[in-house]
Image (cartoon, rainbow, N blue to C red; front, side):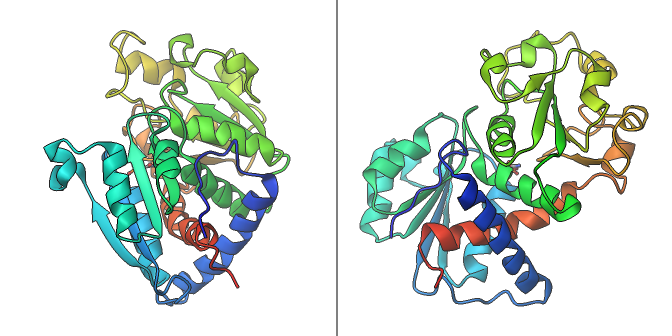
Length: 304
Ligand code: CP
């Protein structure tokens, strides 16, 4: 069976709900030490990462192995991509090896969709340019649901480099689909064109962002993707937009801090906040494996 998972925009609410539910089952298995399920026995999976990754790549590879799949990881530096092979030719080559699932990360928006058109394998988007990172949104939603019981009605403030963030794009779409109220807060230079047409409120000041929020999601300043001069200095950015203990006091009682990682410590989120109990960055990483297990089961049509 070929099922692709490319964006939150084309993922129905019912599918998100069922994947989150199933991730709970996967998490229970991992927590009880059972990392040898045979749900993907006989299947093969390739991770094709054209951009650096620790969390997404490792968690997909662990998820595939825990489900019993054969897993191969490819990096451009160690493959024929280095000899000039095109994206499509690489994908077709993997297809001819009867690969069942390709998880791809690429700097170009739309690259996973192109691969999906040229292969019989199920294609999963592990992050494409500034476009989408739907499995990060899935694990973020799982983490919120686990803490608060449900996503509907939560107020989530996404703070930071929204313009360059595929995590923000996928969370805005996914969370609003699930009934959360999404807010964004960033310097104008770090907001994408057309943000006013997305299902989120653009906050004008720090009070609007923090007051009433259940979840504060800090985003990494993506120094590698942006031109210089989008904000005057790192220090000034932290002063006006950083997530601090003082600002968290404005949020709802029991509010949590999330960060997709990797974090620039002390820039988008202060170190004492990152290391406090209110920050669930480590739970996000743990939940990444369980949610990706649920997703791999779905894309391969392996659920009985
Ligand atoms: N959150 C995330 O995508 O992290 P990696 O770049 O380490 O995969």
